[in-house]
Image (tube, rainbow, N blue to C red; front, side):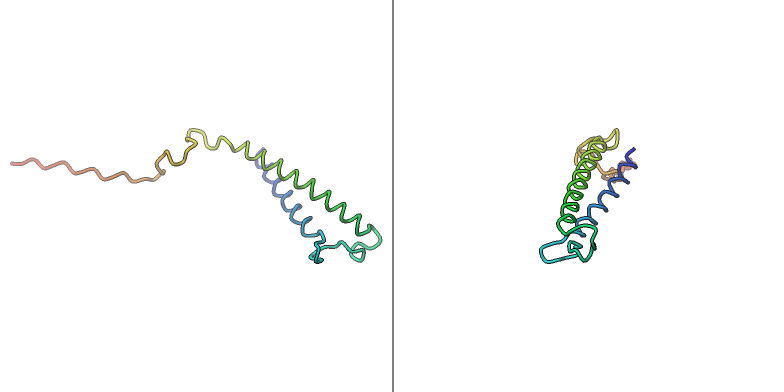
Length: 105
């Protein structure tokens, strides 16, 4: 289930980045907002409204998926405490023990 959610999250992320880059900025940017780019299909205003709504929907999906994945991974690995500073590292070398004293003759 989490793999499917991660793949969906990745697809939504890529789509959100693409939609944001397509939008027309104040300086023109990478936008297609002019009527020349869209031909007679949609006006510049209609394109802006469509892209704004698409951005809002994708942003909502992104946030929902992020929260869902965070809740699924909330427990972490079972058997391990929640505080990483409270436990020693996995391969920690302990201090060397002093060698036993040799018996005196």
